[in-house]
Length: 236
Image (cartoon, rainbow, N blue to C red; front, side, top):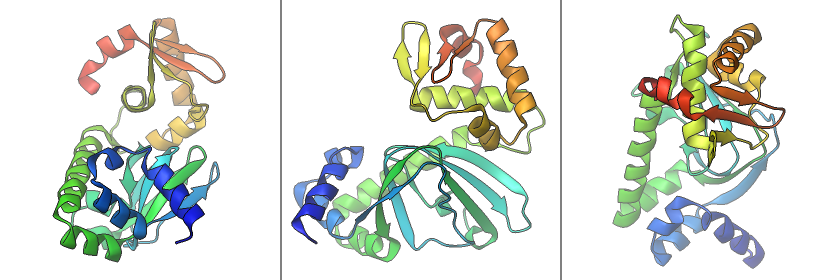
C-alpha cells in the first residue's frame, strides 16, 4: 500500500469508534486488508441475492437499505450511518440466498471495504479483533431488530412517526427545542422510500405533527420537539 493511501486510510479509521477499541497492531492488520471507496449522493450500492463477498464499514454518510424476498415482496427498510457496517446478511438468519438487498446512498458516502474472506482470517488469528467484531455485530443486530420498520404493518402514519423517532435518536443533534436533524440529507422522499409509503401520507402525518406543535420544519432542518419524544417514547 502506498504511503499516501495508507495515511488516508488511517485517517478514516481514526474517525470511527472501532479505532478507539483496537490496539495498534490490530488497527494495522485491519488497514492492511481494507480499501477506501466513495459513493456520490443517490448512488445505488445494491447487492444481488446472497452477495456477501465484502463488508462495508461506513466512515461518513447515510445509506438506506431495503430487504426484499426473491419474489419481490418488501420485508424491511432501514437506515445505516457512521460506524455501521453491511451487507445485512447477518440480519436474515439462514435465508440469505433468498433475500435481495437494495442499498442506496442518502448523502455522499465514504466506506472502508473489507473482503469477507480476509476479515474471517483476521478474526480467526486475532482474538481481540474477533471479540470486537462480534460485539459490533451483536449491537447492530439488536439496534436493527428494535428499530427496523416492518413494511407489512397496517398503520402508515405510525410507521412514519416510528422512523422519525429513530432518525432523531440515531442521526439528530440536541438543541434547545428538542432534536435537530440538519445534515441536508433527509427529505420527505427519502422518508417515504424507507417507510414504504406515499408522499400524501408523509405530508398528512407532518401536518398533524405541526398542528400539535411536535415538529418544526424548514428547508434543510427538521426539529423534533421534546413533546414528540415524550408522546411517542413507546415507539423508541
